[in-house]
Length: 115
Image 1 (tube, rainbow, N blue to C red):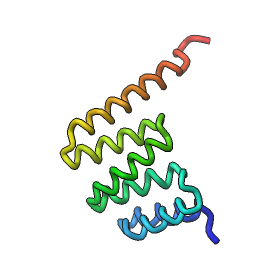
Image 2: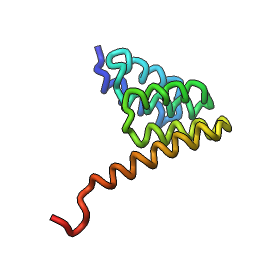
Image 3: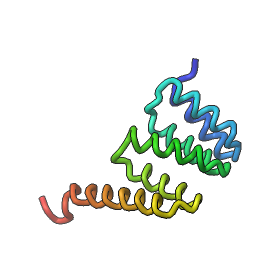
């Protein structure tokens, strides 16, 4: 049986070839092994978005944000999915979350020139 990484990698190859339906199946197989596999959740949401399946992309984006609440890209992607559905208040809220997380990340980084 293939590992979650092998399913994920196969999905990436299919997505690269714009076979999003096939990629979705591979990502789902990876998630059957590990439902919290963040990379596969990201990729699954994006594959649905590429097919114009925004309701599915939003649902998976919400799941991803629940699994990985400090993931800047997860909130940014969810914001994009909302914007594509003309759900502006929701998009702005997710964008704000992403900005706040990025600011927090920047504050934790050591300042240049300090030891």
